[in-house]
Length: 342
Image (cartoon, rainbow, N blue to C red):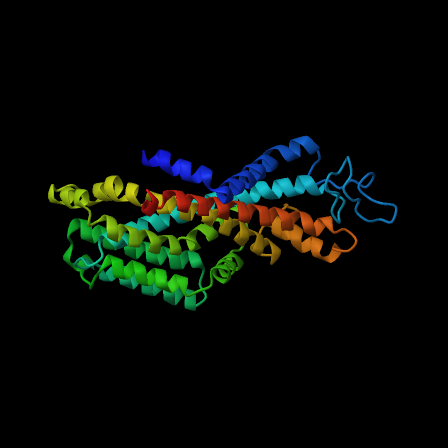
């Protein structure tokens, strides 16, 4: 009944419907436009894509959005850019949502509980990684030092080894939320740019990992707040009294009750990821040319806004429609899933 009422509220929300239409148009454009145009996004057409003055041709029956500065089909490149943006945005959103949900549920569930043991070897590994980064060593060795400390410490806890588990006790909620606070103290785009610039080679996988591993912080805080409400409900208390494992309670009882806010955050996060990927490409920290990306197309078109305004207008309109569409859908889902209206 609740699901039917939520769907009814969503369909009555005009803004949400407009956003859903924008998203559907964007997905259809990314899939169908290259097949309808039939041009190679990397091929220059020096026969039909150039005017007599040596400038890119404008919109015509052959090139619906004209050609770019290298006389390539602007429509096809825009569609391929949409594919790249959507793939990166969906993958990064999925990664950020999973990490944010995990951190938020664990932090909220253990809020106020007795601290967990933090093996001394784990702290040593973390300190070694910081020292290696300061010394200018490869990030691989820093990550390896941290991972080794965590693995050895976890093995010590599992085997109840006294010398491996020696160390302070730390509340999981306190530790995780302080980590979130530190991450949120950095502006999101600056943090993403710094991580992307540190990579030796920028690829689609590297960008989505960068966005995903830096985009979970806000999700974790929202999920933690919701978990604090859910863990005090009768069915959760009863499950704990019956001796159900903690992981089972989190998975079967807590997670389904925080899924609503998670869906809303994930939908709006897609828009943020599209915008972040476009900013990275615009500033030269994204995928390298000739790979078509919206941000790079926007950068290349700004110098020709008078002679070829479509080169600037096309990617700008695509970014605007994508971000607006996913934001409107997210707001519609928030209103539809709001328990106060249930």
